[in-house]
Image (cartoon, rainbow, N blue to C red; front, side, top):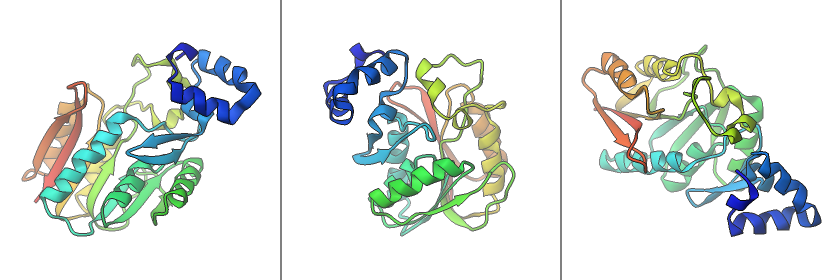
Length: 242
């Protein structure tokens, strides 16, 4: 991104924060530094979230993941579900769901620094989330849940991406096997999901079918739905275990 692509609101917020030093901030934008990090917060699903280089910048696609998940929660009449958010980052998914419906939410992440941001966001948004440091690739899930939601790393180093991503936490973006996290979550979720239950994923667009086939092996009787993002690309998987 360069300064010509900034919105009027971006410029206003940068002026408020940097005053006479705004030119230094704009130079960073010209070098692809994310304006969201310079501003220090983003609006996500109508709520404000603090962001810095320790967490991914929440995106529209993830707002749509939450919107779709809330529809399923209502459709299957969950009452105060126990929800697990895996790879919480800024906490945007966990906190937004907690703001939207009565529920009990646990959120995990492998990054201590990300969890600090997530906890601050929970305080700012006045919600109670149980945050825990956990590596889903190495550790088992501790409790039973009604819903598991995750937007895990799925980019490969060979993928073509925008230069702004160079400044976001690479551990939250890239993985050697683009289906690794999904398969590990599915495998461990079998033992820790109540009935009925939902697994909700945001995914990359290239490994959708592989993940769905893998899920069918562990949840042979589940309803597995693929849904699209705003660009009509396969982006979400919902596993409904009735």
